[in-house]
Image 1 (cartoon, rainbow, N blue to C red):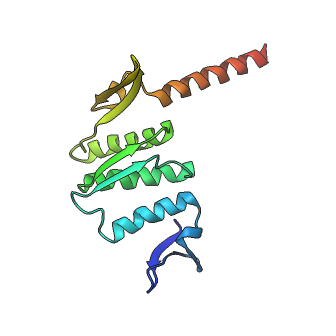
Image 2: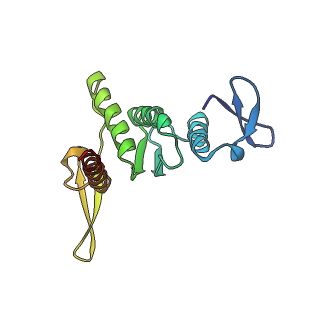
Length: 161
């Protein structure tokens, strides 16, 4: 975040920048505010061993350059015993987390992971679950990304004809 968090005597949270200056947390951009909130939960012990983190779309309003460090933090929290539930529509975020999980397997015991995909089926919702993201038969964000890649490639070759 380029600084550290500090609460004033009245309980207001500030981001103190390494180069000087500070800003109240509510005035920080949404992406940084999310990271600051996560940092604050870690600092105050809310995300201790056997704690839980539920996060819907952690990638929303976050610069893609920060998704890698966020994935590092989430995987480290999971390795430290925090149970994490993430809902994402970002293929980029999914891949960043998967890369860190794969790397952690090489360094020690595997972090238990369970992936879920929700599918509309027969007028209802079907749930598919797997221990590896590659074992899911349908990942909506992947299907959409592949369709977009195909369209872009088609457009590229049409412009060259």
